[in-house]
Amino acid sequence: MKHKIHDVGVAGQIGKYSDAIETASRHRWLHTSGTPGLSKDRQLPKDVTGQAELAWAHIMQMLKNAGMTVEDIVKVTQYLTRTDDIPAYVR
Image (cartoon, rainbow, N blue to C red; front, top):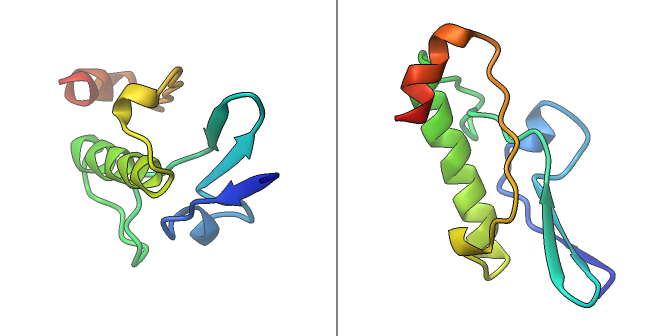
């Protein structure tokens, strides 16, 4: 297996990339990029809590599609555009 795509139908709405791509080496790697808190019908929740919950639901689905769980996550980088959103995001 060179790579396997695990789309959940969100990334393609905002760009020309896949939600997640699994690559094979000595170990399995699942790379994701720009996972937005956007619904499959292009709806954006009104608050950061709803957006974060939706983004994490997408991540969990990508993991499931790849036969992985949250325990397989090695690194997460998160970006918020408003510092006022941090308390709601981390709870």
